[in-house]
Image (cartoon, rainbow, N blue to C red):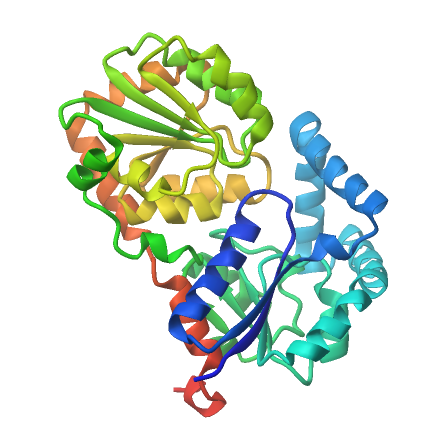
Length: 380
């Protein structure tokens, strides 16, 4: 079967790009003759404006999270009918028409059979132009949804949980029983068959009897990782792996500082994150939906760093309610928390079991298979 798809994301945060790339990866695996286009919508924004958007987003998240919290809640309030949400929708629609017209030629050349987006930014222009010609789907990268993602003009939505599906039903999304599919958060094929603990430890050359914790830094600032690492210095019997995950500033800052401590290793991006999830007794991370979906495939016990307002806080609450994680309230005492958790073997095993119940490594495959199937089969 020939398959042509276009996938869009916005490089704000960690998960949107990762999920978009996972969809393309699975597409080529499922349909070898496929043609894919994976684009960052911010590439179509003028450089000066792009820099301003990303800088404002990062500054708000790190310096004034209360402001982001207020924006997030106001745009979600009453499912998009709050004045702030309506103003943002009008502004976004106007800006999208200006930015996204530059990719129309690429779309015309590819002639995609379906379009997928893991971020709402810029999608207004695509929906205006191709709503009635090409199926355009929104793919969630968190366990809950937001009203900005629930534009009724989308052909359908792929969500990360039944809770997100309920949000759509509360909005009375048309034909929601067919257009809202709870398939999970798309992740790479690397997580389809996770390694066993023994296999992963053999790959990483970590002794079976040694305790191990992995700290994942996708979306986490350098100061947070520094606080966490500092709390782990006094655990020389542990193996501590800190993966900064494309956070170059954090990597450069921490690499030299913790070099003298042999039990702590600091790396940038690694190709085998799945091995670290499987090998670890505990994984410390921020509540990023994609990272949590990845870690759950290995049944990793998750300690969640102080979540940012909005989607991270929702993800954290989702995992806590299901007993799959614990929240870290003080980053400088992570080492102490690890010691307590390792002394609670039954609780640790239960957390791993519950985390595995969140796992849906086939999400991207299910999304593509359903979307590329014939319309008449979707109704069944």
